[in-house]
Image 1 (tube, protein in one colour):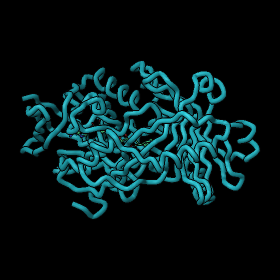
Image 2 (cartoon, rainbow, N blue to C red; image 1 turned 90 degrees about the vertical axis):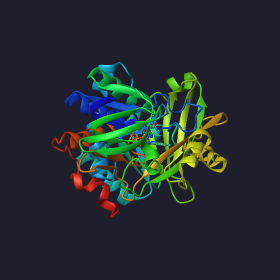
Image 3 (cartoon, protein in one colour; image 1 turned 30 degrees about the horizontal axis):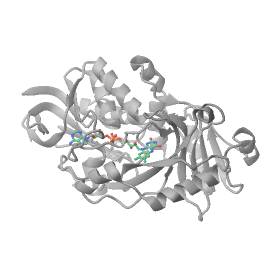
Image 4 (cartoon, rainbow, N blue to C red; image 1 turned 180 degrees about the vertical axis):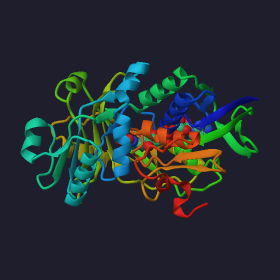
Length: 395
Ligand SMILES: Cc1cc2nc3c(=O)[nH]c(=O)nc-3n(C[C@H](O)[C@H](O)[C@H](O)COP(=O)(O)OP(=O)(O)OC[C@H]3O[C@@H](n4cnc5c(N)ncnc54)[C@H](O)[C@@H]3O)c2cc1C
């Protein structure tokens, strides 16, 4: 039976980051998870929330926790790109247009405190610099120049995985069926029936953590259904008119929907698509079967047409006639911060609850979890107790 010092279960955003930081500190690290979760026909293989080529990245956030981990992670994108050859970051900036002035003021202050270069943009300046956007006159507009834009979440996971391997970590293709604690660590039964043991383990199984029973501590996780619309644009348009387009979060007035929009990115089919998704949560998934089904075929025709309509309003000159949709899941906690904390007498670190914000900040989130497992100094930005698994009164 294989034995490791540290076994990370889940090779997504948080798991690959944690494995990288563990491997940086010590030998004897392994990461367990399916290599091609979404390509598998078998419905039982756990899927992932990072199978896409674009996520918004920004330091901007009203919560100092999220701006802090974003700042720390974004600062290391280029180093990771250099170390692994993966292209992660598309630094085209970030715009936040919001009807809620108090949220805007709070976001501006928090972002600046975290070191983000953010300023208010008068409406006339938006019209001048970004003529393709049609932003309402009566909303406040923030712009983060630099340290923002989009990241490729699959490339980010690949880069952190490659880095972990460069640093000596092992990769195990498969998934965990159960974990038992032993007198000196943990024993994990894998999908192929084999067992692997470790001194300590991390559970970073994303949306599956709500249903997989791997953790003995139950955390109130809500797994939200998402459908995104991808509008096809020509390569010439993507590389011409929209080449410098920032990613955009928009909270317009009540008769419209709050959305995030990404500039055109090239997808695996070679075509360029601009993506729009909704900010609000959709009804949650109820069980593992529903979760697997949603990941593979989740669609919401009513929302799709709302999204196409909203993109047409936000960008009136854009041809939205050719579009497709994509399904995904986010995992929320009641306070919209992740769970990162030790359970089972410190033998296991639970690291779940991305809350729809974790792709951009994977590096720093993984570093937090790894520091707990390694008994190293917690690198902030909030006290560890604020992310503890038992903070919701569960157990
Ligand atoms: C529509 C949408 C838009 C988003 N937009 C943004 C954005 O703009 N900016 C941003 O920062 N974030 C965004 N996110 C959030 C981000 O993608 C997630 O927060 C992030 O992927 C969560 O990381 P994770 O490691 O928890 O989960 P995942 O990335 O899903 O990784 C979990 C991994 O665990 C594996 N796994 C599950 N069960 C097991 C098991 N039993 N054994 C082994 N492995 C297992 C899975 O196969 C998967 O690879 C968005 C998410 C969605 C769905």
